Length: 349
Image 1 (spheres, rainbow, N blue to C red):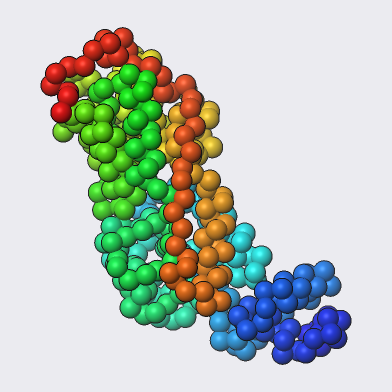
Image 2: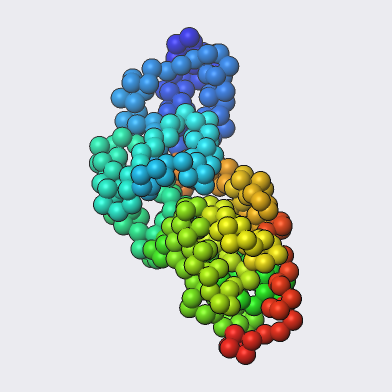
């Protein structure tokens, strides 16, 4: 089937059908949807090279994964990619994924994507508090959406989960279970979401009148190995913390392993709460209590926001802050009796 036959079938001009298939915003969403559905049903497949030349668009959205060697399989990022990719594909766009070490290599990869017009827009993941990728895209006036907020004062589209609220609630949950010595395995300090989660932890401890020992806060990368080593350091403290908050579920898996290696029982001797609710959280030993964010839905929403941005929706109208949900599981239980029944004077602010 050719474009003329499809146009006659729909009762539309070839120009309208072509622009609908190419996602032009001057064609209504209802018409674009109708044209795409008819093309799929009737087996019409446009020539991608001719389509790109005609529209001047790459028909692709770019994403540079900020990952080091051996980290491409991060389950959080893979879930986002799956959700975003499906949403973009439904609108006829491909998701072009590259990987580069965070920093100069990552920025160079992003610059190549947009300078050579290999993509029509960009999804930015794992934002930093001060993010040069956001600065570059805003300076170039290039369409993008970000997974996370930064300190950038200029408006830009973002979707984030409220890390302050999530860790404030997680910490309060542990306090209500009787815990007083609550430690934090945080993320790398330049990551915006790690800063937000630390702020939530500190706010809840302050609200309860509990002092935070500096040794109870450890910064670590978002890996099981880093979580394992950080937890070993915390468990070795005397008195040791009775509960540990982990910046991510991936760190928390390592934390559970360190607790078991020390001959202790998670949820009894040391409670653990993570963040993300990755699929592995329900099958750890014991199952991991966590702050859940709907990863496939987050990815899909990022994809839809990207389409809305390409269609001309203002950045200020594409800013969303979602809330995480606490998922209680066996890794978080009541504080041991010696910690639950009394507060040490040195631990009260």
